Amino acid sequence: MLTRTLLLIAIVTAGAFSSGSILAQSIDSPAREAILLDAQTGAVLFEKNADEMMPPASMSKLMTLFMVFERLRDGSISLDDTMRVSEAAWRMGGSRMFVEHNSRVTVSDLLRGVIVQSGNDASVVFAEGLAGSEEAFAEEMTRRGREIGLTRSVFRNSTGWPDPDHRTTARDLSTLARHIIQVFPAYYEIFQEKEFTYNNIRQGNRNPLLYKDIGADGLKTGHTEESGYGLVASATRKGRRLILVINGLESVNQRSQESERLLDIGFREFNNFPMFLANEVVEDAQVWLGSEPTVSLVLEESLLLTMSRKARREMKVTVVYDSPIAAPIEKGARLAQLRVEGPNMEPVIRDLVAAVEVDRLGFVGRLGAAISHIVWGSQAP
Image (cartoon, rainbow, N blue to C red):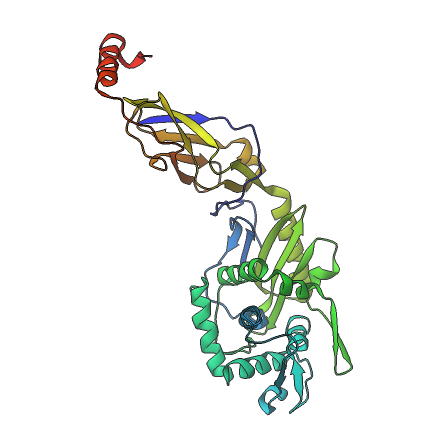
């Protein structure tokens, strides 16, 4: 088994990515639950009780919105369509859009009623309009959530209204936010809107980060007595996006300050480092009894890693394979492994494959190679 340690100097743009945990050991937070991740690679920069079941309050409206966005994408509804306001929707308490009983409201206005105004009434209008009842819609939310990777979330309503069985996790909410950002970029733009007026009532967006010059452009706040103050947030700086979920904070001010602090740490202490392009030669391995003396080893997909700046300086990159590699070799055959290690990060391991086909030598060539090996041993040319 041959292990080669590589020194990587060139940094290139990569198109496919690596996820994993690269936890910053020095970060702590007063939040009861929290997770901070890189939106492009999915790498977790910080987490605290990220898999604990928690009441999400209005942050669960993101799943309601996801369901609406999917209907808009597949054409089953349009922004100009209208939905009727039932008495149940009209009577909803908590944060409201202030729709009128028996009126019809456009999907476009309802979206802003949910996103900007956090309207419980608007959320129920969507649930009843799309599934016939809020109960049926909640079941569909749970089912669809499982399909997109929300492994623990259970939804009992469309609003986040307190219910002992309405639960999710910080990790699930970060997964949901990442889906919305990546799959529905056109609709995601609505999350940046700072105010919306409906029925002559103007309301401001509850997301405190939108009013700070920190690159924030979404997503959703939440608060109940049980959940505390929470926020699903996202921000972009210099082309790099982070996603943050925090919950269980004690006040509006603490939520605002802590979310800004954690995002600042994520942008300051971590970065994305392109390693290899797809099909870029990582190593040339010796071949035994082949028509070519070496075979190039490449990655099938580009590799981009998120890590702390300190870890980047102390990173170790190795290639492991059995040498020499016996011919014949098929193009695309998995022959080696690339291993990337650094402080406070899980090792990243990727297969390396043959870039080209290498035929086996004929009888005369094999005989010559055998004689050469007898004469020169492992140092044969």
